[in-house]
Image (cartoon, rainbow, N blue to C red; front, side, top):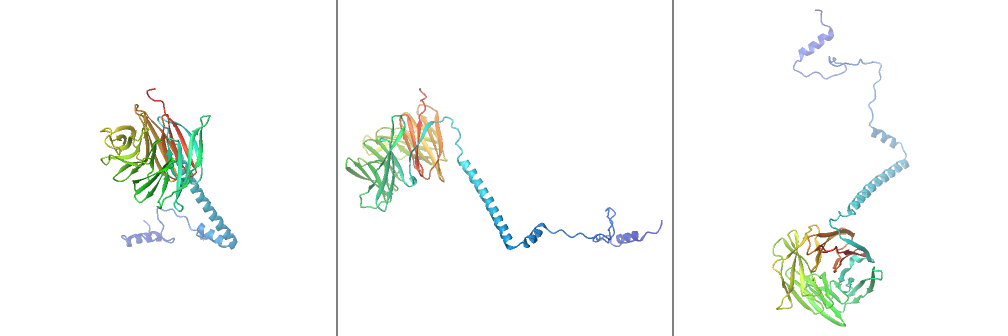
Length: 407
């Protein structure tokens, strides 16, 4: 074999001299890797400059501009950002509105109804709403504490010659002639109104020029009122330990037996089913169901209601946990339950109807714009009226009863 060349000897010497050391750092002038294919270095080539990042080049170009152009670019960029933000917010609101305005799912057994606006006015959300079932009259009232004055407007509903509902409006505002300064007052019908003091409610009933003053214990101004008959105006006062009824015309207070023993039971309200205050029904939540308990005036005393049966009757309508507010009505033919919840500026409500003799439950659901919880449920022999108070109007739903299952 011939003698090794200089390059061969150098490589061998490097391997022999440092067998346990890592390979030397590569430089363009070091030995070539046998596995690497190298491009010969052209001594006449010019080294390429390192590329400048784009944002630095853009910055240099901007620095060459005068201040007016720079200001214009900043303003245009800010406007573009604002437009993008406005577009995103508008799209989100539109998507939210679409979600809110989605129609309720179709009812399995829908109720049919006619819709009408009873009246239009401003700031109904600051007023209290009541209903006189005998005179078919809505009452809106608000109390001016500075002048001790009760502003009252009434709206009487009646049918014209074509069978359409028309509204007759009247103003019966009046100054409250009393030495006390009340926290709030409410007109319940044309002849009756009440005002709130500390833990008691003072009521006034004016019939044929005779004013009957009465008082009932209540921590808040009662909202539940029913014109049972022409001679009976009943106010319901519910306290923590007492449940009482005040007949404002006779100034008689009547109590009722305590119900709802157990954590799963809760009283949801009262309704007088006949044209007399001698009997009253109570709606009770029992677990996931509604039940109706009946009471009548005691034969031994006329100021106490007692149960008419040991067990309450199953209403056949399920409890809705998402709707905390409940109104109901009942009579010997049917029961109707109105549940509603309020979120932001809307009220979502559902009416359920059932004949006592049948198993079919009929329903209707609606969503209306409303800033308060003022709703009225009025039950007649052949129809049910639902009134919804909004900021600027009162809506009326005239619900037609379905044919009886016995028909």
